[in-house]
Length: 562
Image 1 (tube, rainbow, N blue to C red):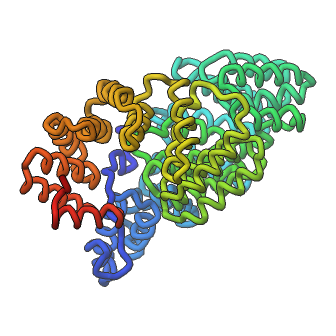
Image 2: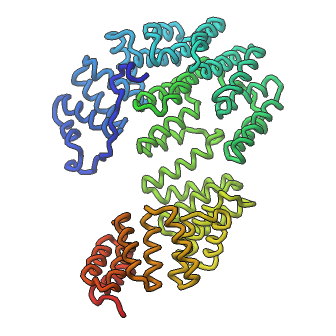
Image 3: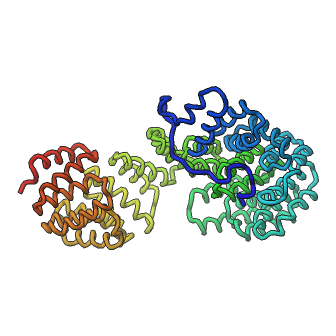
């Protein structure tokens, strides 16, 4: 579908370059942008595109247009990135220029349609949309926008007629059913709306959060809250006791929300743009998908799920600051507020804003005192930063909120066990590992960790080695587990067998200091002393923690004691 859109950016190449602080660290194209003229800015714009920097591309294309205002190719690319960046003043100017050159340009037409709709100028909106051909993307989005323009102009029958072409294509039926229900609900044609909602709920996508929100509000409004309750019960039965289910119940049942999801034609137009952009979220031309989502927010600022989509698009392209900016626009009473705040915390951690991430998770745990997830995330966060005692305390708090544990909670016992073992609380750690194995007896990670720990302590040697062998059978290419098996043989004096497994482990994980250290020990015990010192020196060069580094320096100097 995307190949026919001719927006000028159908395929983007992913990049991972990052601009530095000093001028000499900046990409060459960006340094050239400081020179007179627009060519440097044009090159810098494409460099920004290659590393998925929407804001940078938008800036540089606008600078290029300042030097070469009428260039149609730059206008088109500048329009895509201005809309994707949410810069609608610049986008409107680009769109007007493109529409004068090419009246049927799709994105320019959508921008001008939205800008007219925002002010309630439905005639201008219709005129802006009319020249766009009815194929490709506009075969879906065009009828939706036309319907809501007609609704805005007060002609509900014309709106319903505008939607009709979508009912003739099987792929478009879910969108048609949902928007027919929204439109009839908006027009207070309750009998027809009820039938349309029931059709939506029984079809593909009928259990989506958005469909449940719209239908639940409608059934509340017409005096059928029991139908809303049934919808939420079905959702809970399918998804379990999820935070989203709780939020839906709070939003639709406890508050008895009865206002229609769409209260204006502008909101309906935002729903149309959201429906299409969310269906294209996995397309290669992610900037165009982002542009459509930004248009949805432009015409209907309260669309929280669209902000989530925008955040997800930036997340997928590792622009975590922009993702969090979008997530931050989701109001606290939204049904997705809880899950969005978890994403914000994860992104803060990715940006190395560790104190802010911990504070965000702590605040979330306090605001949702029954939910274990923020404390689990906090435990994972502390464990990732080697703050094991704090991690164990966070996991303890999560367990206090869990109630009865299930099979899936083996991982929580495992991660708490690691934190306890690393913070010198072995008795509790051992109990957690054994509980994890009780829930998931063949789990290779737990088998390996507990088996290795027992070997290091000289306990349960036969059982420990059998556990590690079982783990290796399941994950023969996991270098850490293979290392455990090699070390098991070493500790039991089987040095030749240890070398065989430890050499394999080093091949699988070449840059781990402990695995290289272990191989050096095994070489020494088999008389390969030159190779042993080489492995110890290699381990020392891999930045081990200081206690291990001190031991390595001693072994390089004096070897192993008999």
